[in-house]
Image (cartoon, rainbow, N blue to C red; front, side, top):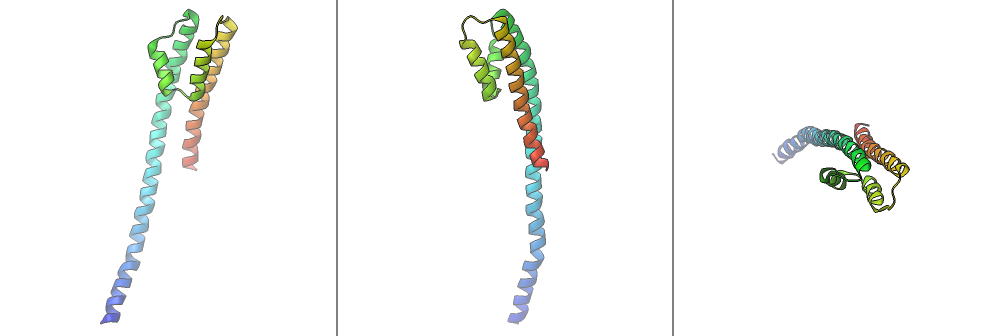
Length: 127
């Protein structure tokens, strides 16, 4: 009787290993898929935000006045590099046309770099 009980328990344990492993693997896969989905949404939002910010930056560089919408979007959602570039530009005295062009180019590069980092993270999760 005891041997039969041990056999039944051992059989139940062995039979439950496959469903538990399947559940663990499925959960990991679901988490990765959700993370990829979140990163794609973040990428799309940031791409749209940077596109809008670059247009508003151009207006600001032309008029030497920056909208609060542009400034707040950049400072809250922009990369550390984009914020640094903007803050350095604001602190610069006697700005020239060359300075403005350089700021615009550097800001575009910072935006693309930030977006590429997110794309690279998505690629690493897909690998």
